[in-house]
Image 1 (cartoon, helix red, strand yellow):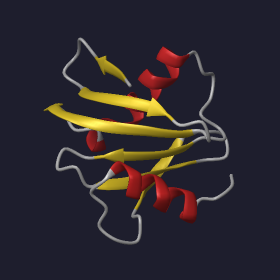
Image 2 (cartoon, rainbow, N blue to C red):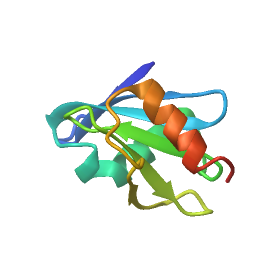
Image 3 (cartoon, one colour):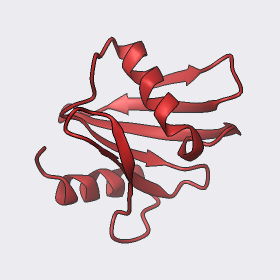
Length: 106
C-alpha cells in the first residue's frame, strides 16, 4: 500500500491496485476529503504510477467514515461521478466483491 500526501491543503489517502486493475483508495481524513478532491486524487495517483490514463481501471474508495463507494470513469479514464455499491459497505473485501459484481468488465 502506498500513501500519498500532497503539500497543498488537499486530500490525504492510501491507495493500492489489485491484480485485476481495481484502484482502491482510502481517505485518511484530512484536510480535505477524497470525495471533495477526487479529480486531484486520481491525477495524483496517475502521476505517481506513471499512467497516462486510467482507462480500463475500476475504482473504489473508502470515505472518511469508512463507507465504500465506486468512482465512475469514462472510457477515456476521467472522472464522471460516484456510484453506490447497492448496499452499505464497510469493508474493503466487500467493496471489491461488489465492484467486481457491478462492473465485471470495462
